Length: 313
Ligand code: ADP
Ligand code: MG
Image (cartoon, rainbow, N blue to C red; front, side, top):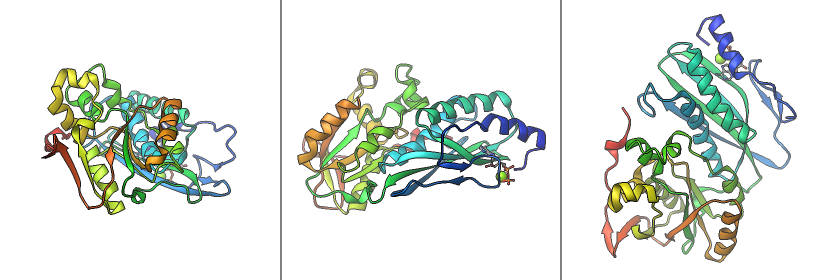
């Protein structure tokens, strides 16, 4: 900690909260390190994600949204392993102790943390260019995590929700889908429920094309998928038309949706589960032998448009 004592006290007060009924948190914020207790028969699953001003958000972006998104990104990574999140730690790099900024940030962070019963167990607060790093830890029954590498030839490939919505909201300042970018909903419960069903899974925060590519690479397999099978948000197609919409679905990024594979015989069980949990899912094709992810349009190779112009900073 590098801020002065009074500033730090202010920040500490915002982040220290009473933790009720959590035998898994032996020591939370306030000592040199936190102590947590892992339930019997569970493995620890850990993810870290950083948001840096100028790279991942504009310096004047809504702090409530930043508080939400830095946690949502990690919850999405845990969901993609089928893990249950339990604990978070938070490193704040702040150019100054701006109370209003911190209060709004904390509001966004804790609203989402409370929804998932995630306890903030520690962190660090230092002076520096605005950036936020969150680590989330969770648990999964031993051997039950879903990895990227488990896909088999013939498995169906599914994606949740409407990828591209976050990029559409941000780049085109679309009001109808604004929440998809500012307050994305990580698929925590659905991800957990896919344990035992999904053979492989990944979250698509970098974009469907590149992240599904990572899954197939890890599984040493390929796929030929038709862009006609991609789910397109109505609000987006109405404003942008088909071709730009497809580009955003494939590489808009910042959606905290899940892409996963399941053996075809489990499709009806999956559809039932998705209905029960109110999650929209779309089958976009199937896994095949090979080493490549190829997109097709009417049987012809479709090249994924460049996305570099869409980034911040
Ligand atoms: P140290 O100098 O030993 O690192 P700090 O003064 O940085 O101690 O932190 C004191 C306590 O406050 C620790 O429990 C630490 O985890 C917690 N803490 C500091 N900053 C944050 C933060 N931004 N969010 C949550 N906990 C924090
Ligand atoms: Mg410290």
